[in-house]
Image (cartoon, rainbow, N blue to C red; front, side):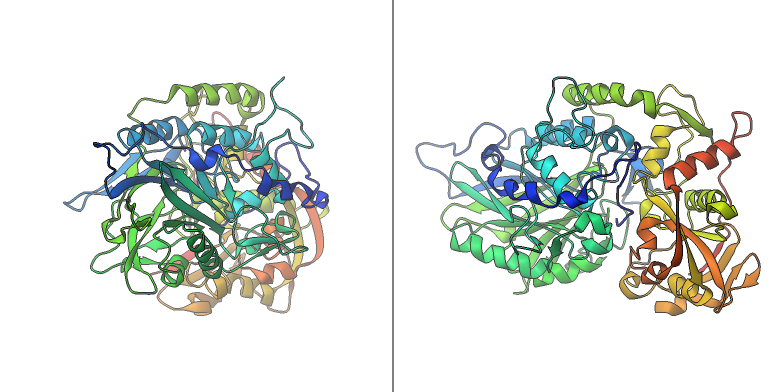
Length: 607
């Protein structure tokens, strides 16, 4: 999901983006050999002196982990399953202790097993990982035996230099090493970014592809992020980089692999689609191939050369296993495993030793729930405990109290209860004249990364919101801006929620109290926002009047497809979004009078 980029986190870190891309070139040279040959299990080719013509390769994949080492809390930690009788079950899932057990169990009896990911392994992470610049997550992925991943947009949140450090290792340039006598080793799997080049040289930022080999079996992996990454990451994060068309890039490198004799190819694409049902076991090939899925991945899949045998996707945080026809009309597998480590995909690729290619007609795939009723992987428990000890002094500090769950990420409604709380916190903190004089505040929905959950996550007690929980909701620590916008620009911004780049997949801004309007989803484009219903404190918006508008620096830069919000003038930079959120919790809740979930009556939705 697009979201506000992760910057200047809890300790107001400022990374020297100006340091440029010096360290990045080292990436290509510094790729660990082990990442290419790592095979799980106990060798293949059984038989009496001759190898069978085909061998089944197990491809395990997942995407959009976002540093969720501990099980994600509340509704954001559930997956939906539809039973044959039509009833829908909500299953608690995820947590790297369970993901490790699931993957290790799945590999048993599969001598040819490769594990790949579809990007956004880090970024927008809970405090346990985010506080330490996601070093704990990279360490966990190494232990999981991840073989390869594409980059996602969030891998660029802290810029190319920090991405290079995650790959190559070394202690943080500002904060140093977190554990005495221990140097961060970096990822022992390659990050692939075939469609990201350096502006100055035109050369790839990272390796475009890697070849996994085991006993004569060779599978090429090409990794790309979405071409629109610069629209959903701060300017500093993508400084000096160019992002290219996904289809053209994959086709180019598929030809290169083919020339090198690598005929079996998997594309790892950090872009996705939306199935017609949110249940992980929904059949999106019913009634025909790919009929039940929409979104950018459909056209991408239809354009990628038939040389590519399967597509592992991500970004939309959805679960699907579909076939979408390739340019020659043949069905090809396209998969995505939800987010936060709640699912993994198990795909069988039948490899023909004579042609060195995958027998596409026999590709089978299914998503599996990472259930929490299986044993925890002890090495992951130790890893989590170790980092939790370092994080505890900051993470466990109470910030406020709530009377019930306040849903954000886990809410599918256009107006989310937690979105209202965040927007109100921003308005309240920035409305004093000396703080910006804000009259209204906007929050982008993708920047709300979790729910506020009433049940205690540790020893703090039910209803207590800790700093760690607040950080998990707003992990980017973006600086707030207050700007002048005309009423006409305000109306245009609201229309941009459902038009332009956001038409196919609307991004409904969360609005502060006092702003009301009607959203008519039976209409199309800008008409979905009923212009004459837009009011502020009961009065129609005056197109000619100037309003003071509060929003995070990402939205104020026109991010997430809101160019109108980027036209603000007379900018005042305020506190961070997290500081305002925590101040609001402290001001509006006590142990005896906790904050209740607010009404969601600002946006009237017609469906």
